[in-house]
Image (tube, rainbow, N blue to C red):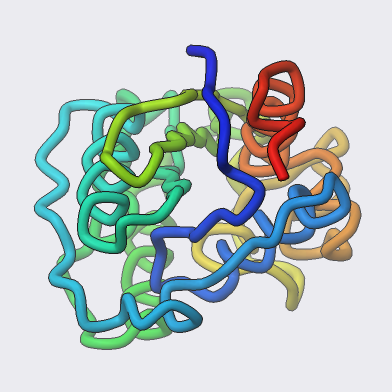
Length: 216
């Protein structure tokens, strides 16, 4: 991770996913930061940058830099996804659109999860290890990278979905020794343990350790 400079008490989350915005707000809000969505600052019409990086960190950086320059605001962006050992790390950075189907977030999630079930059908229980990974990047209003952090959430892939919380692959990542899925965790539990929660808490520590935390 890198250090930060002053002036980031108000942070815009560069994501059109309201679930991500709420998760980041739940972590950074209590630390004294005003966390805004793109819709709060008129950023919904900004063209999405092409995420052609070769890692979660590279894609998070692409998004943070592009939105910070377009909005002239301090911006935080993350790129995250599922890494399955039996699939050679897939879907990885392609997690959001792995199946290539669906025009809405709900449709894409359903198609991605169906592909996951099919790909893992013949994999025995002892080889179903996986994890959610998150890379987070903070940029100032000029697009200069201030800090970068990462987080991971280890588990195994379930054979059937469980739980009504979360989004994406949450119903299929089993945690707690396989007794619950990520989607069965209450939001506050997930934030305390998840990949995005870990990355956001690390980001808060970086910011608090610099002049940024003392800016008015």
